[in-house]
Length: 636
Image (cartoon, rainbow, N blue to C red; front, side, top):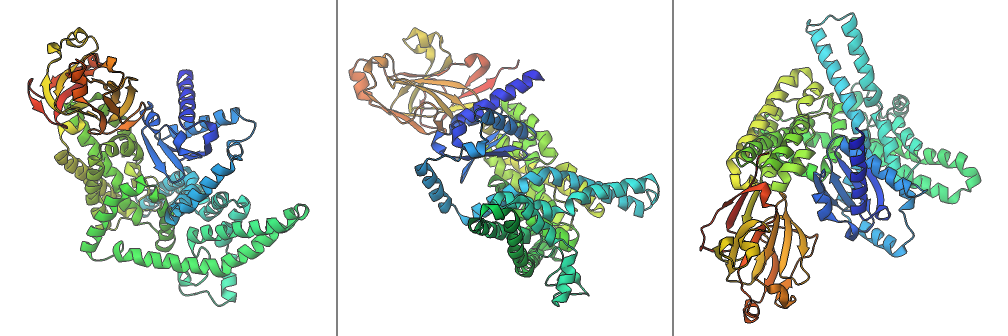
């Protein structure tokens, strides 16, 4: 355990360094699976090295920084270690330490902030409000789900209505409602934190929205519908968390206005009083009714598709929603759906959108199983290990390790997983599956489904897994998952290393590989990866492929003596490159005129780790992009 903790501390220290050091980090938080870092200067972030760091599942650039995918549980631990490192380096907290006084940098940040899309900024704010609540949402959802299941069993006669089972059911109800009943309050607190208002005042806005006194106030103004309370212009909970977020945003502006104008000696008393008087009154009289109209309109629009009695519409809408959910997760837009879940739960007594969207994770699981079979077939041990590590989390509803560690890097499975998920979404929508909460998902999600929906939810998961598996298996080929398919980096005639006149290469002292007599003076990347070294004399380039293969391309023999004159290199050490990307141009005539041989060895310097299969015949002419070598990890 001590070794593991020490390794994580070094890991956190490495990440802070690769992000440009603590001075380049404005804000560092985490969600379930990723670090979310607001960066001062993106040019100081070493993206390639972060992606190549063992333990990093993925890297996402966002408008104001980066997100580093680490996986469930680990993200929180590493975030705490990073913050501890940063606090240890300064007497001030990271947020204060990193605000900085560089006016030029601050101007740049403000300019970039104005250039951000308002929609993306709104989604980011919503995500920051709800992300800290996810652990409580999951716990409360599980309590509610199990409690509802016990209640259904009691009503069906399977369990007694009295005694210990009844007490357990009531206890679970208390545990779930302790959070869900006051969800608006927690939302208000976090919204205030996000909008830089006093947090307890934000919580009060949330509490006001669910206060029983709202009904009395509404009746006094004639805005209450006694026959159908939910149709009232103003009632407790009207507008839901959408209204609370808007209300707290206004509260933040009002509070800032008063703080600028009221002396410090009087601010403790009068700022909160006047802020709540103004913002609270606006919230109850204006924002709650307007947000209620917005929520009602949104619900009616969704019901055109989600609540349709036409099975064709249900099937099509369910398929599309499930198929498109993975891209929403990729861009972080899925957090913007939480207010919609809340509106549905309040107005309908259940959530129909959430079960449909959870099918996306099941599609990922199916795609990953197909890739696992293919990876085993070509003995890609790296991919096998990655999939095996990510699958349990995916089955339990945490899809990001599979997205960023498996399907997205290959891209095609990312698409096929969504297409497969659509079948589960179509079935779940058609059978009107409803949940009582919006977390957790995956197999555990069955617990938060209404009892009558549990079987259909499980059937939907199975269909999504099968869909993702079948489509991925049909689309993907062995070469797509082979650990080391190298394409020719030069156009020309293939020769064996043994035929070369340089003993270092012909005796394979540096490693195994192949040689090419070039017909065109251009060098291309033979695989996706990172440039490890460019010689000062420019005649040789070394790179590490994404699968860990060390590759060296040495243009010509004895060309080191030309001091780089015939060569023009377009990459540098640390650059990420894609297969087929132009790395170098060279003047063949100049090299020949200097008496140098043009034959170019392509060496696998860690060849001892692989079984190497040649995919071309010797003395064969090859063009750029032709598969030349297949590398398979040797079994331990």
